Image 1 (tube, rainbow, N blue to C red):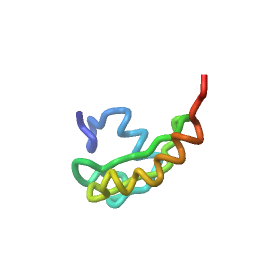
Image 2: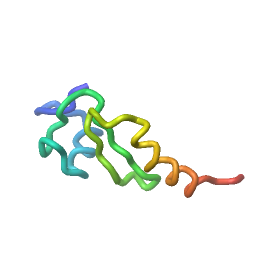
Image 3: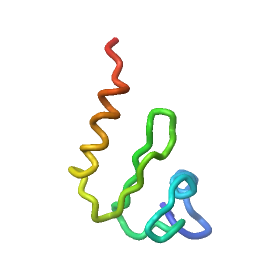
Image 4: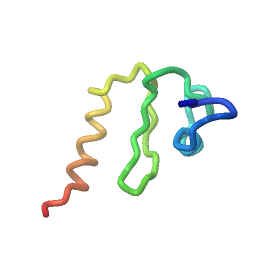
Length: 70
């Protein structure tokens, strides 16, 4: 899957156009991460060096806030 250049996959076009990045509209390296909310809006973009454990602090409140007890 292409994440940069003329053959960029549509999902990456959307993700990059929704957020600023460390290299503007480019994805710098593997493991760059995006946090997308339940409405499909990109709310955070993380560098490749950001640990998933660092993201967990931002992610867990969103999961519990939007949880459904069915």
